[in-house]
Length: 208
Image 1 (tube, rainbow, N blue to C red):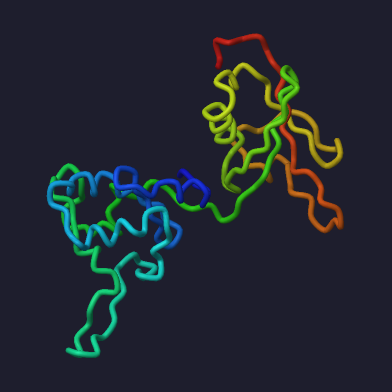
Image 2 (spheres, helix red, strand yellow):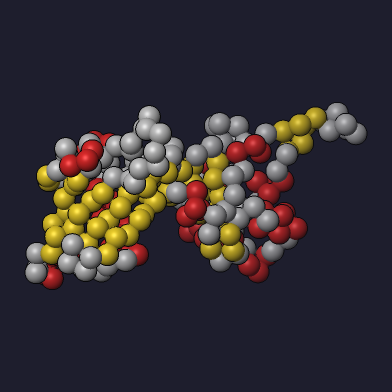
């Protein structure tokens, strides 16, 4: 499963790039909205105001919409009317599913907490501070680093160095930072730097 930072989700707040969060679930509603461009209405305009935001307060943990009793009619009414909208094309939805529960739109989960890690490139002498998901494996972090900072990240050996030099050595690429012994320093009165991952160039661009 893919995990996302809150900082990542908030960037997707446009009509042609639209994500929301429901009880920790990250939904990409872009295909749904694009399918409705020619059949736009006030409900969809209202939904658009919540791009990149958390809509959990409008929904039960089952992802069913919450209701309230109308003071006028005494009957239940939806707290979030845009849930009534649906994609028109069968290719952009799952038949019989409201969009909050449609697996077509569920792309992952919001991380339980952010983590900081330093990526130190011993070839270039540069240090990159990254914010990653607590659930990310080293392989996930490597791919993010590759996409954002260095397309040849695969041409380096990835090694760990933390706890003041007491836990050096190879990394388990399928493990998280914690599973590799790269913990955040806690219980210290000083503001210590985050754990470090050291990159050593292998001179093999074929694995990049």
